[in-house]
Image (cartoon, rainbow, N blue to C red; front, side, top):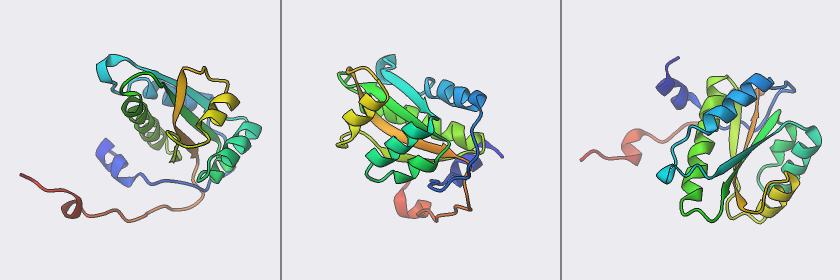
Length: 162
């Protein structure tokens, strides 16, 4: 499958099989994250890949709309230096690289909000990340338990050509 077809077939996955993700895949996904575009090439990010079941359960309890994190195989926490002007844009670009890399490996994922959420500081402390960073997003990951084919808006309804 070519890249654009893979992007168009991606859907958020919130229910996972009890199947681990190899460390080679996790490492490749993190490597892809660091290649995301960044304003002025600042690269203000720090990534944490969580596979420990106890920590996944804690993350699922902290995220107000991410309880399913407790059941995923891995959760990627994307942090960025909060004093950088474009930390959010840079962190979001890295988040999408993670989601696309997971998809290319046949692994489902779901973006869970981080920035400006009341649990940002709790997640940072749980994962022992430096105070200069703030949480941008969490990405749950695992092999999907089901078929996900949520319809998307038609191109003509969300764009125009000029």
